[in-house]
Image (cartoon, rainbow, N blue to C red; front, side):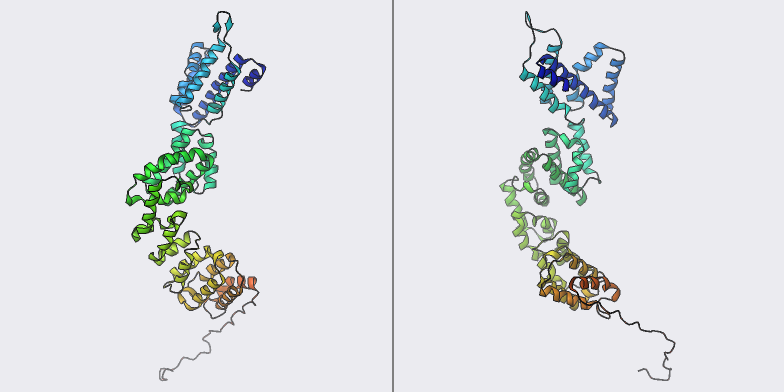
Length: 447
């Protein structure tokens, strides 16, 4: 290609077109070798034809290989789309006019224009040379296989890095569209396990980041049609989709938007559990989802709070701490509060301290001191009420109080470091030896 550009700059337009075609030929062979290394049997067979012709100096076989290159790249290996193959065929035809003694008239050879040369160079680079060796169906299958793998990332940044190292790195429009539509259809029709759904959503967000226009066009094409065919039983999949793909709400269409709002407002409790946490993340559905929080059982609300911080869920979680009826439920509430620690006010910390003191299910739960220590680390509030709250909790770490010395030691040290309270004095050891202890005789009445 460097020679082709040099010829173009020198005004040798026929030579530029010939060099451009030679670059296409060698690039095609290079791609075949990469495909062969990945186990593509068709590529190995095609290379064998080329190598046999080259080694035996079979001019006819070499010309046949060159003549069939465009069709082979389009049909056998899907490196070119049908439209792109037309541009490559034009390059081959013009290369033949330039390389052979074709006469434009009785006394003048074929003379391509500079514009034609630039068009061929651009087409060769953008349609073939800069593209990875896998496109079309083979690339699509590889991408779907990668996304389905349990080793595919579930977060957008890592998914972006993963896809940039494969066929999606310089993908053409048809491939982008096929991947986007394929993953979207699966998410709207199949109830996958959470890890697989996470991988699919991460892939869609990463593709949207790599190719925003192409991705948005593909979603706008498929979403309204596909959502219209989703029945009520599976409509929760639609709400999950719009919660995970930011631009989806704006392109699903008014009918789907109204249907989603009605679902959040009127769904039965068991159905609501399937998508309530997702509805809270959609700005247009959030107000309806918040109104229905009180209808959910306490365990479900706490489960929502443990998924991600949400100011709307926090007040409901706090009110459950005073009435927690088991150690495990008390611990799950405190675990949720760790995520919300930076949202807690001094008054709310004071409420937590009172609940720890008054509800034995909270104070005697084994992991309570550890969760309180995590809340302390994540909380930024140091006002009067917060200080009073941690002073009350600090007292629970004293010998003989709710937190045994062993459980409360780390928590007490963290509170001392933060608020400057005096260190807790260890409890005096009690001699429990029975050496000098007299058992009452059987004749003596019990005291």
